[in-house]
Length: 628
Image (cartoon, rainbow, N blue to C red; front, side, top):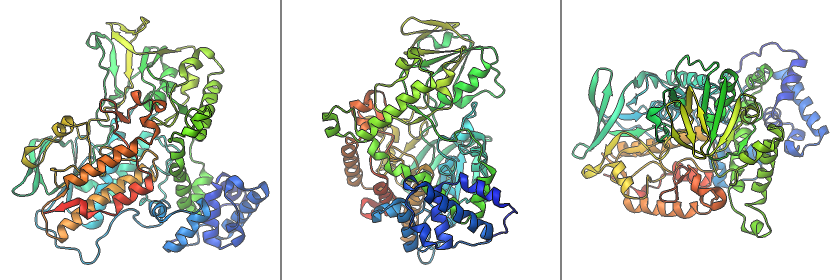
């Protein structure tokens, strides 16, 4: 229902339009006005200055007359596809399926609903969701929509997942806020273009409360083990609670533990001898004062890069330990507040927020061109491909610019592997901080700790009061440390360890472990990102929900993936992975956490193009599953 817009003058409207994404503005304006002259305009990158002026003037005129006073119904599928095509070009049916919910016109995009009459839910039937981070909350919302009884358990004292445990200085998302949100919670009033961790945590708790998930959640409940009872077709969970140990029974278990759950601490000789503080950012002490202190930051991944500027402003001296250089890139408006005029436009021009979500996500569908090796290009002297080499040149120039051309830093900072082969790191003033008088860069690895500091592998010795171990998480320890025992007492971790590491079917299911679904399991989010991680949370949750719905309709007690389907899927996955940059010498396969280096296989991400994986997860192949 439209509401009257807050009074605003034409100059303010004009400022809002100047801040707008022109592609989103054009599409929303056409959707509202039907102005064919606007539809005929090219994409913003191809617009002349005259065409841009025309678009902006028409938008100002329309907003002056209609802001906040028009309802925009959900467009029929044919119209939606036409609008998408107008904005981003022709697409296949599979591509349209994957993109259809990105503008979020539907009330709850990506979720599934009952078809026909809802079956009777057996007395005592219950789903247990483990983890109250973004994926667990998404699963809870899906259960709420279907009216499925569920209980959510989390070992932390509050909802938020990784945003609960990570509270270090300047922690924030590294993707635009408008894409790091649930598509069913419309027009959330974010404060910044890339929001801070505390704001994301507050958002997740808001969603959990609003959609009924919080009422079904139990915090400080740590699931330490789970055994499948084959006679009753239920999981028996061993849970540590504030009141002691408790057994909780579940017909279905959905794990949403995340991949950034198990901190990876330094395994370095002498670490126990160090007399100062060693801090992992996921356990940041409240009220820690670094003023005037000697600090080391080990690591230059996303966390280490976010931390440095804030630490350097207070510390007396900071030594940054860089084992492997990273490609670190700028993001427009990173750290900047959302302008009031832009917030007004989101709220008062129907469709603008929706199409802004779409345009912000669309580049993810084109990333694969940066992640494929072009052998013909290499034969002509190129390193990877024209697109990747162009990106390398840009990022190398950025390093030179941000360090003020300091050759002593540049030679240490430029990686010897291709960009986009590892998780992209967003610059938070890291390069510039390295040029401060109180900051030094130490290249290489720490050889051993001493009582007062550490010695680098090259013999360089430094003393410290505090060592910040920004050494990341053990991303190969899925579901750890909980032990799951499936059919015939088979232990999930032992099964993975006996093979070539964690594997799953569609990242979600493992044979012999019925009624167990993993959200963000092995080989989950596609390398290209595609629809963006928040969409995948909902897609994975809806896949599990479809399996539960089928169980209930057919009055079955179990659903399991067939072993032959599991093996076939993983053979195809491994074969497809070989086509990607991450699995090549150019992509630094030997030092890439996407890769299980022991078994030389892609581990964290899926090698599928996003539209293909989207279809696999939304159109259930029942022939691959066994219900009994």
